[in-house]
Length: 219
Ligand code: HEC
Image 1 (cartoon, protein in one colour):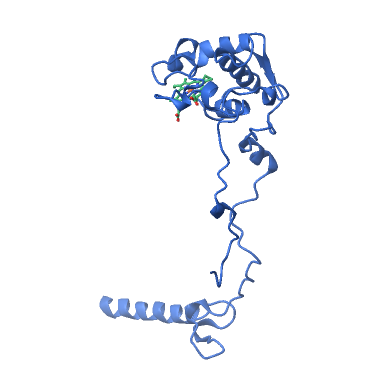
Image 2 (cartoon, helix red, strand yellow):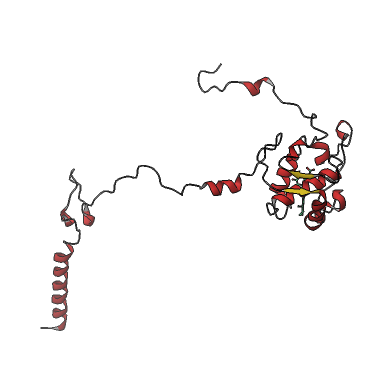
């Protein structure tokens, strides 16, 4: 037998062996010949069990109460609901201010490299220029706590302890002449502070804020 003829015989044997074996590959019993109930050839995959559909999408995971608590830091400013435990004095606030705030807000909070004064301006709203500071503008003292805790120091927000934020609030309120030098701020005392601009805001109750919601056949 020539070597070319021997090679071709060998190939034929291999191909035949494969045809026999490969026909069994489909699994599930049907193999290449399997068809769907409507006669569509199923190819090599053959029939297979269909997974039941999940009863709902299962993306992500439930958020824990502890994770939510870390974000739930707003204070209801008129009555201070949500103010945390802790306390701080004017003197303590002066020290924290010197370490963490003075670089941007300047000595005695009268203005620095990044922001203008946070002191004074009380009574300036009917004139020009108006001077907006916590003392001249905020109607309720707990706004100051909420703002500092949430946003300051601007380059490291939410790094202050509750005690530090109370102390800084006491210090800034004292610089504005709103509380005495021996004042201590905490969840009880802070909502009682009377801010000079307490009555300087008006409720915007124009009629359209009271319109009933309508989704169909609206007039
Ligand atoms: C890196 C600079 C920087 C540092 C540090 C910083 N602040 Fe501020 N602060 C700002 C800027 C800028 C604003 C104005 C932000 C705006 O108007 O959106 C601001 C605004 C404020 C306001 C609002 C003032 C207003 O008129 O309503 C308060 C209060 C305040 N900062 C307190 C603090 C306290 C307290 C510290 C220290 C713990 C501090 N800041 C540290 C940059 C800084």
